[in-house]
Image 1 (cartoon, helix red, strand yellow):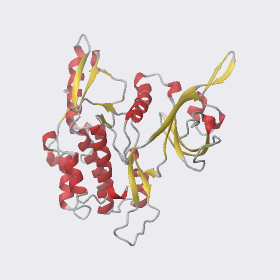
Image 2 (cartoon, rainbow, N blue to C red):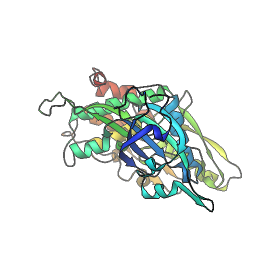
Image 3 (cartoon, rainbow, N blue to C red):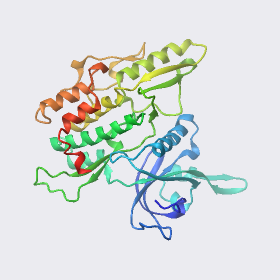
Image 4 (cartoon, one colour):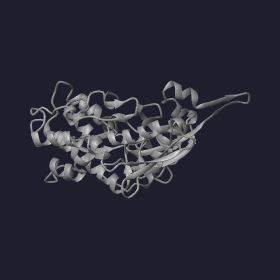
Length: 356
């Protein structure tokens, strides 16, 4: 990315890729004179931090920027290109959802003026895994085993990279995995892959870890969690994390001062990858209604027996791969495999990493 491409005026918007509560993602190209790749497309995230009243909402945006900036490059993790803080002008405002369009302008007695916000520019990857699965393998279709193995292997490789850099993502779901479509794919060829790369994105709920993969969260008076980042996707958070934090929140209801709670993330990544596997193969999570369905409302802890974990039909996935998915989401963290074990089973010959 050119050092000159540092303002909204440096980019021309091609189309809107998607919008959420915290931002809009636009497909753009850099139009600065002298930019070496004038036809190359990028993803620009326009953050809605101009009207966020909570510390957590603001922290989500700052957290995502900090994690992406310091993270070394990896083919299965989204590549950060640049960021800047600037006004939302009409060239950008036109592409925002109505509520953000309205909030992007300050109106007072002196007139109106543009608000400023954070912009991130990232590499552009074709589509989300969720959209890919819905378009190519809508229920009741079965996702081919080779496609399952490729997705699991490449996301696993990205998660291993995050662990090596002491980061927990905490929101691995189909909408946060991007896929590059293989333009040379031939459906008649069983060895041809419909996708060429899977990329982990959206680090808004990520957290930093110690070298032993632990993190401390502060629980305040009344049991409220005091943190600059959001907790993550509860459906993909491991039971031991739910229970440890839940028990601390329960104990703090009558406490007189805040306390720090140490959370062990050493088996969180393999758990959320296992949940992702179930969503790809079965179309739903491993335990119906998790975590609410297996939570004790009195103690705020989560507990289930492994017999409650959904089965993986053998016509959908090879028996040993299905058994691995079930072990990955075992209640007992000690029973779960390592990410390295998962990669060794799903991609023993390095077949899928070689396609990157």
